[in-house]
Length: 409
Image 1 (cartoon, rainbow, N blue to C red):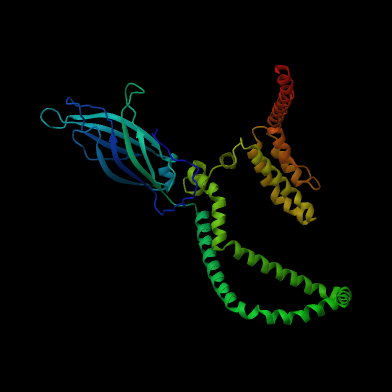
Image 2: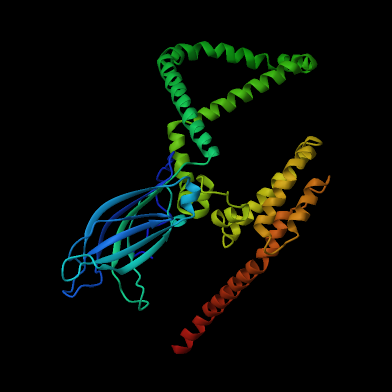
């Protein structure tokens, strides 16, 4: 255990760190209030660091109960998955020199264990740790100050996303800088009082010819339809590209980072998030991911997820035939989500969800929302009932207060 801990919900997001090599940095800083082991009321402490089959030790600090080392060890791992499963074992010992000054043995002053899976990868952990003794449980054995940092590589998919994000951001900044400068230079010539005056007759002519244009458009619609479709597609593509550029601009990226910072901090600071981002071994299951990012006690967030799942499943009605084909892909995904969210309360909900989605004309059934009602309905009912009782008691007390006041007078 440690005497202090860092908050898992930081206000600002600290960037995630990707390292090509997997290694553990252990900086043994200092200790305090160690056990006096020698006859003179002091000790000659040193620290043994052990991870797996690797064992290292600090120098010996003679006659001190508050020694300072500030020694750093780098422990490499064949892979991050191997390191992540290990435990950092620390042993603070006293070097016994005997009456002649020769080393006669070691005495354990205190120990501690830190599972590396509890260390946020890429983040520096600077803490005082409580030492435990081999005797007299609960007896103070002093504290050890260490700085730990575990490093390792991202999973392949996140490396690709990171590179893609930097590429898009770079291209966007260049395009915006180029087009922004050109637009600023052309604005005085394109927008002034002379161009506005020149537009007046054009606007008047279009308004006057509106009836004729309407008739021509109606009569020639079959001929114009292909051009209309092409025009709509071009406008849609231009809109999508412009929107993508706008959303990828520096101000938009800053706003987006503020919005997703809580999620990114959760990825960085939780074991499940670490397993999603880094090559720590097998990927976490869908149920553990949901329990981490949308815990079961966040019932209304799970309600929003359930409604979203049902809306996606029912959207096939907007695209007849094509939507039903899409159900073949969505049905197993919906079943997995429903199973991960509600398996504890409705073990058959996933099967019903799959059947409802895969069969034609049954998408209207809100399976996920019904499963939510089964799991959280009684709890919500009790909450509403308690609130109604509380309001009723408040009204009774409010109505009774004038009578009490008049009786007292």
